[in-house]
Length: 171
Image (cartoon, rainbow, N blue to C red; front, side, top):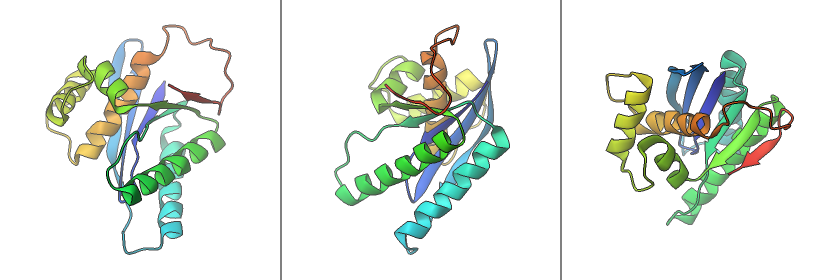
């Protein structure tokens, strides 16, 4: 099973692909999709969509987990993050992937054991669970792997939920 985790953003969108075979977890890919703030918004969203489409084609995840935006001080940043998240959700659903959304606290709880974990604690727990020895940079990549790990931790031992491919799950 492959899960694509997404830490949404328009300037920097973190992604991480985690595979699970039995109890074995492995990071297959991690990185950041970047778009230029100088480029027109619609073109940036189309660029992000194309990159997400390419990731889905390459890794063929059955499920895509996305971190939900709950609060942003900067309204413009919040809007752009929401738009990026929407593009990812639409592309994943169009590809037949199940889509799940998780709050930052849910991700931290599932990966580090408590919702107040800081960036360094999350990075360490992500690397520990995936057997990665060097720090993941940029941090958006580590965050995205954390979202994928959270999703895998939330799945029941035996799937059988009756949901059809492409059906969104909001947690």
